[in-house]
Image (tube, rainbow, N blue to C red; front, side, top):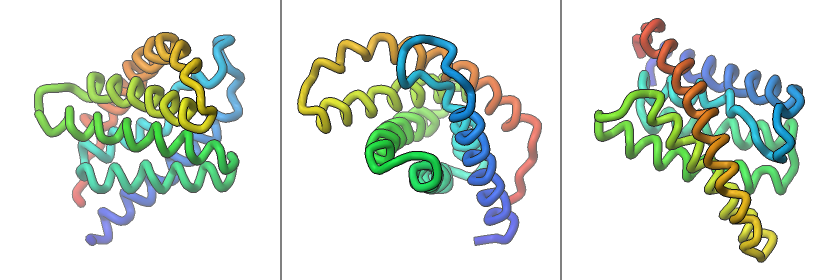
Length: 163
C-alpha cells in the first residue's frame, strides 16, 4: 500500500474517531433514544468515493471497534457492528451502480445502519417489539444521511487524494 494511501486512511480513522467522540458529547436533539447524526460517516463516505469500498469498510470497522473499546461497551459493539455492516453493504452496492450521488448513498447508509441496529436489538432482546421504533429511525436516518452526504460530497469535490 502506498504511503499516501496509508496516510489518508490514518487521517480518515482519526477524523471518524474524533467525530464519534464529539457526537457522544452532544446532548440529544430529540427525545427518541439512539437518534444520532452519524458524523463519523463523513469519513466513511469520503473514503468510499476517494479510495474504494475495501478501504471504506476498513475505516468503518476499525472505527466501530475503537469507539466501542474507548467510549462504549460490549453491547454497543454488537449494535454498532450490525449497523455498520448493513450500512456499508448498502452504500457499496449503491455507489457501484454509479447512478447515485453521495447524498443518496449516505441516506441509504443511514437508514440501513438503523435497520441493522433494530435487527440486532430484536436478536439480543429476543423480541420484535422494537421494530415499531423503525419508522422513527428511518426518518432520522434519512435526515442525517442527507446532512452527512452533503458534507461528504463537499469534501469529495474539494479534496484531491492521490493514493
